[in-house]
Image (tube, rainbow, N blue to C red; front, side, top):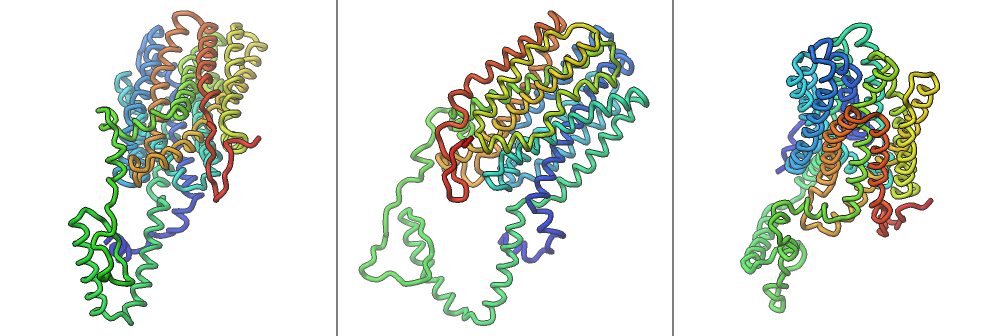
Length: 512
């Protein structure tokens, strides 16, 4: 019925282009860019607009900054499993992406018009929920579309887009806010949102395009066969086949129709007694596992757990700077909103090379690359504690350290995300009865989304508390400790002894 319905419909305009790997990759890249842009545009603005526009007392600004980031993170965490469920339920990655784009527009409208901090929290909730679509639908869409050996590079490109948006938006927003005003900042955000939404709505998934191609081929085949077929023979043949099928089905077997040959006296009526379905044999026994079989399988994988924990540590570090770095620049160096935005440039600039990090991960394996990132980030996070004076030397030293920390944290994220893809492939093959046709991608990346959302909720609140209650030195040293702890499990589990198959060949998880 599906192919017949498609064949009666008009072929979508530019079907091959809109379903191409490059157009789909561009769509997810821009979606990630938009998420980073809309998230980062308000980071350098809020420390000033909360007091100047919303009338918040200076001593309460840090509280509301952390509250807004916590709202964003919790919304991202809670929306992740819902987005993954919708992606599998509707059999489409595009639907959650389009709905996420609409929710991002709604959240931005609320943020643009809001003056009360609690209304801004509502806007951040909408934006956080919209971001979950990129993780739970966008990343699985990339995994569905590209060759497995290219996953690291493409995932890196998506995260490059996300961080590029975060890189550009604070700089532009800080300058625009300082020279024009609050509302003008959101004109830029709406422009990016509009372009992003158009791409999400016009993209066509590979599997959907394949259905159109199959329908067209089927239509041509049926037209050719219609001139020569004799329907009486077809009807009698199908009737005999149906009779055999019903007879066998009454005994619990499922057999395929066979056009050649017919049963004779020596053929058994029941060819074989099939074993119980695999999902009945391997059905999870615990109550929680029966309710959430997919998530139970995923969480039982140490390799996947370690990757999620590493991404959690990465996001704790990044979002801690979101909460504290603008205030530190304001209080230590006396910078305005433009300077507070520019200070993120050295930290996020290395993320523009996400594709290179992904290619390095594909070449050398996730373990070596991610451990290198953890080592670099840990050392230079601790060295940030040395920055304390309003001098040119300390400003230059801060910028250099932030560049190196940025390189370290980006070496962490992309390889671990790629390793989650490799592990999901292994789990799909091992537990095919649990994941079925939908596969494991959406569920795996919903775990990533939930972990990163929880980090966005916890990181700023914890870092803000440490910065206000103690000082900058204590905060940066504890960040270094978190980074070091996040690398422990990677030594034992990331990459693992498994080998992955690509194009018929066995390729080790790292050949450097």
